[in-house]
Image (cartoon, rainbow, N blue to C red):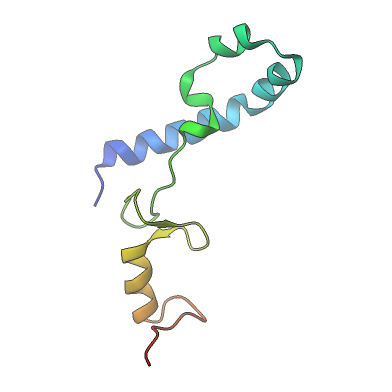
Length: 89
């Protein structure tokens, strides 16, 4: 389980990205990189990290399901994800 501070930091970055998205797009279109550098660093969408919605783990993240590989496996085995089964041959 990830520390709660990391999860809250991720949420804060997501809010900043949403808040400054329009302003960043306008400044990029104008080519005004001096004004763009004055904006907060965390308002850039590149700094946003995908994290598992259950555990907060950032590595092994599956975008389609929004969870990490470990959580995905547990949920698939227990039948919580429709249409996903464990392969066996």
